[in-house]
Picture (cartoon, one colour):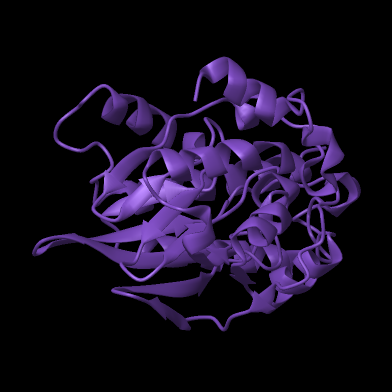
Length: 291
């Protein structure tokens, strides 16, 4: 798809896009709607998101799994990226969500409708998706846009394994950035060479309005635990919800340029991601404590 067409689709400027209430554009960071060609990350794992928001497609051999949905106005490009790789949107069986914020969940309703897929996340996240609202107690509750509701969203238990075809995806609850955040892990194999893939939720200590982490020690403790949990995962390939939070944007550019070895194959990536998040949390707490 030409970049100009993709940009028009994502901005809502393309004829007919505004007629669909599930793809009506929401205000967004320009990087979040930046066109990005799809690419193979490793084995059966593909990047089909935008330049600033990760969406991953897993080919299980018996149907597809999609992780995250980005914005309503990016749905057309996501679906075009899936088709460009030779897959059918209608073959998506499950859509997994990391967090019920509009930048990762805004496109879920349209993607679920177009594919017929079941949307799965944590019970807290599922309730937020069904309502089209962020969960109560979300650090950014006062400053997050509503999203199109996702009626068929259902919860999964922490540590529960979702199986489809030759793939088993495990839910890893990582609350803190939102109350219902979930990270997802699975193995991708090329022959006998298997890699532990982690799609990590955002771990940024970001807040809006009256919320402070200092006044909510339980949220702070939960975020610390989530950071530790990501750090301790078997992790050979990391995808973060926002690529630039883990250097994923640079890795995508390098992979597109034909870099070898594969820049995404990095056993230190989860540890570096956790260290960055831990530093941002401490910096946030220091700012809140300052006179």
